[in-house]
Length: 110
Length: 338
Image 1 (cartoon, rainbow over the protein chains, first blue to last red):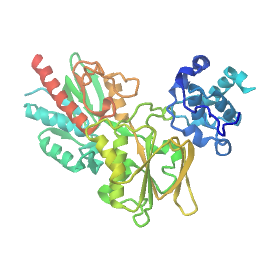
Image 2 (image 1 turned 30 degrees about the horizontal axis):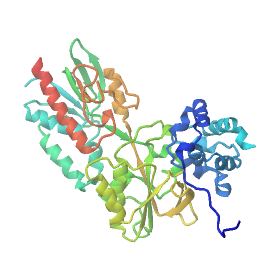
Image 3 (image 1 turned 180 degrees about the vertical axis):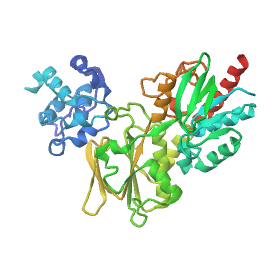
């Protein structure tokens, strides 16, 4: 039946429904992931950001907010150049972090 | 009273402690490396949040401390530990025997040229917070072009909260200094756009938040949440600043006539040199280590050695003065006890 309108899923972040297990695994592998203070240095140096929107800052945040799908789509644009590791003021090894995300969230990437 | 009290450093901490000790009837000795008293505050123009002239604070302290024994252009050559005192050899050939030392060696301003990507020392339009205060005081800086000042930027946290610069600590006073300097520039150049690039704003002190609100509401200063990644020069000789505007999640760039880097506080080499001579430990943040960071910030772990001011970490002017007064009282009680 066509009512002439449809319901859109809520775009709100529901922390009750976020899968924290994988992120906990990521945190065990990369304890520094919690050091991110979202300064945006990685994003503004990222050569892939301009044309694809890739942002390590958004990746780290997105994984903690249950936005795995968006994050994985974004990460496909990463060229692993490692510029973000060089600028991070908190000294996070972002390139290694990205590799760990690929390993842990690998299934979501297929 | 005969007791020798040696104050190492003639900045505001050393001067204030000397004033108090003079009032208590002692005759302290101030050792100052440079040719003038007042330290960094003597190079500053106005102090937040009431725009108190820094010169007034310094000259009042200097005139009150005038009866102390003051050695300018003097450094400590070496220190010998005697049984229950120290023999201090000065670079001017004088030696002093004392059992009490007050370390007021303060901080150094982070060398902004180490953050190469910000272009200090490379581009003419990039200066530091200290350079700007010097320009406020003297009007003499060829990098500041009064006639074409349409856009000005401030970068917070230069060399602070930065593990790549090996300074993970927050320098505490730069946020409010940037707000102050941004307001002052807007007063001088009302037509100019003024931007502050920040990661977090730490408005912890008395009236700081009011000052910040005034910067936004009354002066229209634009605060952009993103750490500057890169500064470059364009064809007109202006500088282009790039960052991520993290609140909109988009890259941002802006062209400026002047960029001011808020260089942070780091432990001064003089502090570490003195620490080596008297075998004082350093804390994990690189500053001198107090006996206790909550209850006993003025005591060093060594008997008879005391601290005041920014040698133990970034401090504001009122905090430094309060510590100096507390240290003078500590020294007085220490002498009384013996």
